[in-house]
Length: 349
Ligand SMILES: [Zn+2]
Image 1 (cartoon, rainbow, N blue to C red):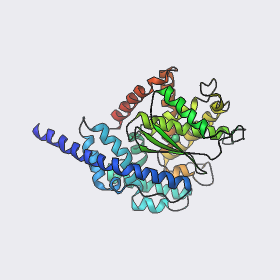
Image 2: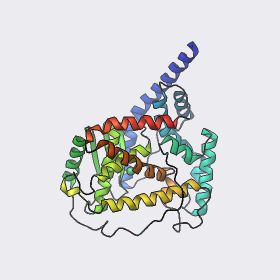
Image 3: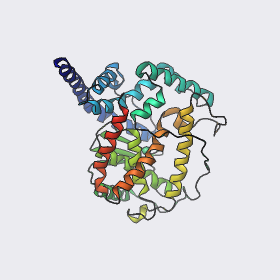
Image 4: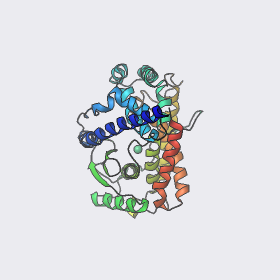
């Protein structure tokens, strides 16, 4: 027993040390990353500490103790994808132009990298860590043409409208945190600077179309998750909160009127069908689908392994949260803590 207690103590000390370094290194890194992303400059490399083998070992040791498993898993969610993508073969293949023949080699390299470090294939590993549980099968019919009007210009919204929306969301869900908004031509994205308190959201330069309003709502949904939960949020849960918040624009909407959107529900159905199709393809890799759906694989499969399964699961999580909240947003932080526990229980390696 004495030895076990000593092990726990050592694992906790190593974890504290690493968490302390991350608390110092991650905020400036995330600020620089967000800035580079918004301006189209090359991103800074991830803090070296996360790509060192000790980080993985520290996370694994923590996962062996009930008291530390939640913190160990949170760290693994950050470190495992970096370990796979940093593999020299994976990096070399990913650097080439996306092609269907290339993605079979890339998926196989990701599997080899994950097998050698974690004893599991890449996509099942990432899905387990990030809370994807839904087994999906069968072909999905997708109407890939754009929803008419989705990108049409309507009323332009300014920074004050985004601030008002964040105030509304903070009040509705009972969360507090600082959100810095960056306008950019880049795809919308959220950067968590200080988990639990400070977030940067990159959103479109012009917010005049239903698509742009959706992007703002979705990213502010990530901001809600970031200030309601500790670092290392399972991605399916993170996307689930973003999906939940984006659904608030659907009729009948309780949001400030400028954010209402009659197309939002139809757009959600279309997005979910595409995610299901891509998730199905990704699960089958390195085997290719009999008929690839496009001339080359989407960047989402090439650069962001495991994401599509998270998007599919996110809608399931959003369904559940929506029905449990029953209009009372302030219950969200408690429900999210429960969701996190459920995912952690299933994720233990
Ligand atoms: Zn998202």
